[in-house]
Image (cartoon, rainbow, N blue to C red; front, side, top):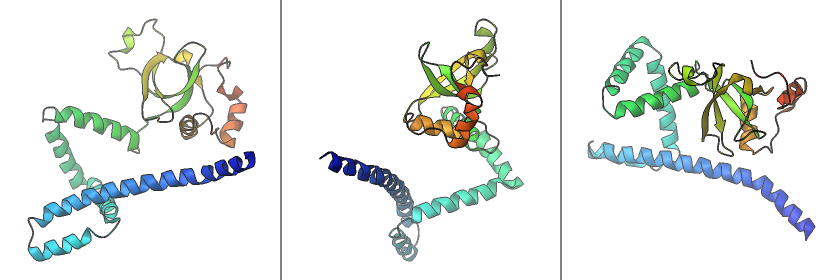
Length: 230
């Protein structure tokens, strides 16, 4: 029985990641096709019958919603990359920033998306160790910047503080925003990508050999490292 259980678990470890990946991709595909189908259904009501029938046939093509979305994003990117497109986008931003309620949501989402996805963005600068949620308990966090000028003078002893993001596991998109003294952080000799993989896997997936070798040369960034960040 122990041998049979071992083989079953080995088979599960092979198929489970693949099955979940396929399920997520099919869900996204279905969602995009549904949105695309809804748009076609709306357009059909205002176009001539012959054209409407042709559009209905398009709904039967699987994956066309994904292709349409990709073409739309590509076309928008080309438009936004030239001078005329940039001028129109500025007018669009200015308009949305004048609408109550909408301006708060739009500006917040735009700032976050620009930080995360823009080539000029620098959302996670480096991975560090920090004592959290209590003394003697350490977790991986990411340096995101410095406290706002209005906040920095109120942080106590006058020591330099940094802003960090402490992600939860296995879902790093939720977490905690903290402002802590820079001296309390320990630098990690691993990339941000390697640290994210380590967090998502709940510590099961260790950093790659390159990161490990670099960490060995610096005491692996352990809490006992006498040289804090900076």
